[in-house]
Image (tube, rainbow, N blue to C red):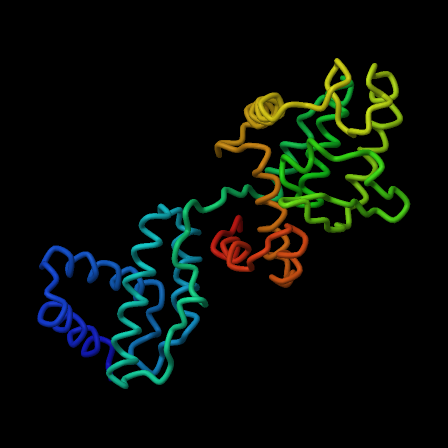
Length: 280
């Protein structure tokens, strides 16, 4: 069946059986205009695929549409596909579990180049600069949560193997590989400023000038400062490095399950959100 005919049948169904208002139906129509603008090759219902809804969400996210708009349009498409399936027009049913339907807030990720600018703007001539560079390198290399980073104990790092043991939510433990750059900068910090810190015997890796673990607020302000100095227009936070880790991994071919394990997500649907954003 031609798409235009299928849509006309669907809109009639919304008017007659669902008793929706004209304004609501018009908003549905606009959603479909946007969808078929993104997929002009889909002219017949035989061209529709189960993956269309998530593929469309990725395009919408890339075009910087709001999460509320993306959610509404995904819901519109899901309803349309359900109608076509129930009318035996298409032979597949969209499983709600296969659709990222409720994106509360799409994560912000910056490009690889912007991450480089953020890292390189840090003044390595200052003790706190060496520490902060090590922290940001580690977050970007491992995908750690901010809370996991600030509570990381020095004995949880295997420098020779490049592996850290992370204690995450619910005291769940996971082992994550860390890149050479991160290990290099952590080593510079541990054998440099941290050796001179009054809290050098502390079990925690990253310390403030008083020998205590850093606060979230302080780290947040530091990242904001570096982002401003690097002229990064996006509003970012320390957690942005975790988002960048996941996004850039997936963009470069990592498997979703692997990224889920590295991030410490208990549900893969949480990780799937990262398939809806792109920095390219």
